[in-house]
Structure formats: C-alpha cells, structure tokens
Amino acid sequence: MKISNIFICTIVSILVVSCAKKSLPTKTKEAISQADQISLLKQKTEINNPYVIDARNQLIQFVGSKNFDNYIIKHGILNCQSNNNQSSCVLNFYLNEYYKLKYDMQLKKVVEENQAEHNIELKKIRVTENNIKNYCQYSADFVTAIYTKDTNKITQYFQPKFKMSAQDILSLQTKIAKDNYSLFLIEENPSILQEMKADYVEECLNNPKDNIINYFNIFR
Image (cartoon, rainbow, N blue to C red; front, top):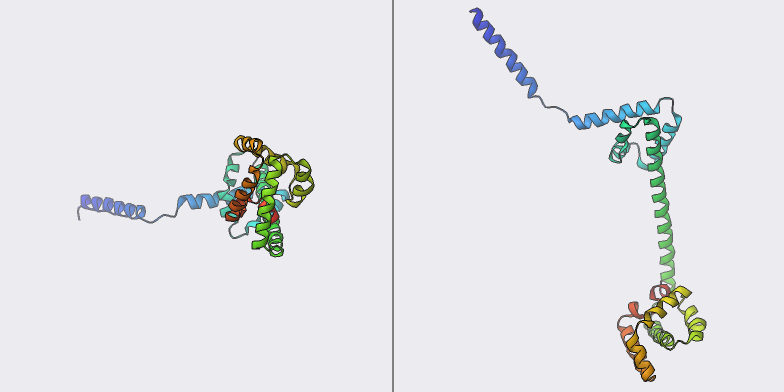
C-alpha cells in the first residue's frame, strides 16, 4: 500500500473515532452540576461548623433526608454560592426554612384543633325550623329597635341574645342610618314598622343565613 493511502486511512480512522465519541449520549449537565454544587457547598460550610450541621439536621426532620437536596435546591440554597460568607448564608437558609415549616405546622395544628372544637359545637346546636322562625322574628324586632333608636332594648336584650359586641351594634346602626327612605316613611307613618317587620320575617325565612342577625355566631 502506498504511503499516501496509509495516510488517508489513518485520517479517516481518527475522524470516525472522533465522531463516535461525539455521538455518545451524555448525562444531564445541569443535574450533575447542581448535585456537585450542593455537595461542595455542604463540604465548605459544614467543616468545623456544628451550628450549620445542627440547623441542617433540624430541617431534615421536617423535609426528610430523601428529598432534602431537592428541597433546598428548589428553595434557593445555591444562591449562597455567591455570598461572601457562605457558612452564614447557609446557616440562615436552614434556620429560616426550619422556622417557616415549624410555624406552618403549628398553624395547621391550631386550625385543626379549632375545627375539631367547631365540629363539637355544631353537634350541640340543632338548627330546627322552630328556632329559625324564632330568630327571624327576633331579627325583625332587633332591626325595628335600631330604626326607632330603642337603646335600652338593644343593649339589654338584643345585644346579649345575638352575642354581639358594641362594634357589631355600631356597624348595624350605621348601616340602618343610611336607609334614608325607610327612616322617612317611619317618621311619616310609624305604623309602617309592622309591615316592615312582616316583610323582614318573610324574607328571612326564605334566606335565614343572610337575614338572621349574626347567624353564623348563633348557629356556629
């Protein structure tokens, strides 16, 4: 074989090998990079630093060791790489995440306890047709007392019965004070109050939740 042919074959062989190498599948660089970055960041910040280790272990209690790296990557621990004090940054990150999760858990516990108590209260109260009728009538009388500014009846009878604060009463009085048309009719003809009460009771029976004063506090 001529030297030129040998030279050509050699070049072709090199190109084939090169192409073969380029065509080999590669692993996801980003996944490898993040795993390596986390590993390196842990090594740098945990060496001779028991505070970072303790904080990390506390966070692992909530997150779990299996999902720990994915969790801290997702929540931005790699931002600490560019921090001048990586150990402090990582420590703050672990503690912030730990207390945030701890607070969320405590809040969830309180909500669940309140809901349990709420369910117990619901079982105690029977929202019968009869007490709905009674409270619709009481609500109509309550509204009438506010229209006529019967302060004694409002504070001594209706306020405790409807479990309302002084602020609740004031809000209701302010709302009714804006009903200029009804106030005008009452002033011109006080007997119209009876018609207003009858209309209120009828509307209340059709939609008690929106018309019984302080419904959700009474029937909670």
